[in-house]
Length: 323
Image (cartoon, rainbow, N blue to C red; front, side):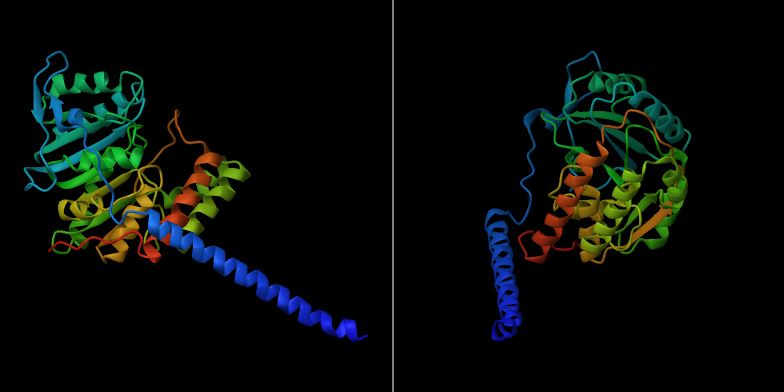
């Protein structure tokens, strides 16, 4: 009977011991992360990434400008591309036809993210057609990931407004007009981000997805909301318009270079109280996606959890907001 009376005490002792061990492990993880993490990213810029070719057949090179320089065109379109020789032409045809019909100045920068196919050569064909003042190709020395490719293109852009758009052409380019109009409405002191969104298509997409992909989608959205971004429903749509001053802040601070880079970019903007908006866009599924739903979902969950931890413990630092 006395032994039974001691059981609750033993259980409480065990619970306390487990909690102590968990706290110690978490503390050790935080300490290791803090010690091994650099507060700001080390952005590599290889020699071949400092210049662009002015024609497909010629060897003449010109230096890329810097994002720190004053804007010299109205719009820069950054197109990250990895092994996109097949899908890229359709996207560029639609994009350039639309931009040519407008009166405002523009440039399109195709960032070849270390492709193994002829992505750069395909893109250079558009340099010959439209000229290097309007189309430029940045061929990265090594594969960085989508976020790394977008960052490198942004850092060499001339636009007052900067759009990054996926090479698959899944988003209708005419929707840029809606993003521009809404960016004007939310802009404060030259700062702002407008995100294209597919949230209004969610019910339709769920109907065509497997149960596993639907569970992963809801899990990812929950993870993003809990650990990172609360102002944007669809953080992953590859169609975002950014003011130059905002790009100068977020892309020099961005650490994540793979698929979850959008989440970190928006988290930085939220923490700095920069204006953020979301606008529905037309979107359709394009064959040829390089995402593995299960493997890449696990990587994204990991990146988002570590993102939250590093900013929470101060291992990653916020930039000084530019005036």
